[in-house]
Image 1 (cartoon, rainbow, N blue to C red):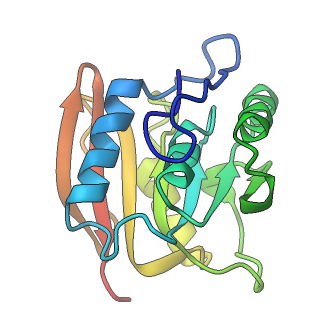
Image 2 (image 1 turned 180 degrees about the horizontal axis):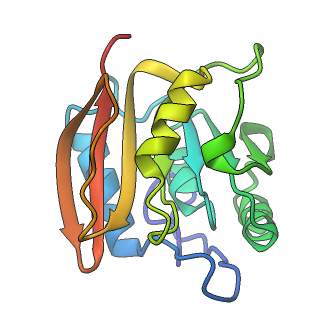
Length: 189
């Protein structure tokens, strides 16, 4: 696994051992970022975007966004091994000052601290067996983490139906093998 494009292109990333973390494949990541960079989901593209990488696992999605011009990434993961891998990957990319890791259960993240600006791009890759993606989206919005016009990229099992919360619109869905990627946008609240 590696960073595909941008400033940190080619940097190898580590993943925790075991089956708890399911890293997004390079092929899927490349497709997702092509859609984000060349579609109309983000008004100004990735430049300067604040990213929230939820159920972050290896942190590959957030680090790829940084490599392609995002300004800051906040990683959220409750798993000790995943956070260790994220720290190692931050070290490999030398992105200490523009990243932060939160040790939280994403679906119970709590109120956003006042000094933290809302996020415009949110990656969610919850465990497929739990199907908590849209619940987590609702919690993040209720707790103030999400900017108006934000874009969500939700990975699920290909068979899972995604029912967006109120105020969220499904803009696109793509299937890659057993993974479905759903692109959702929050309209002005």
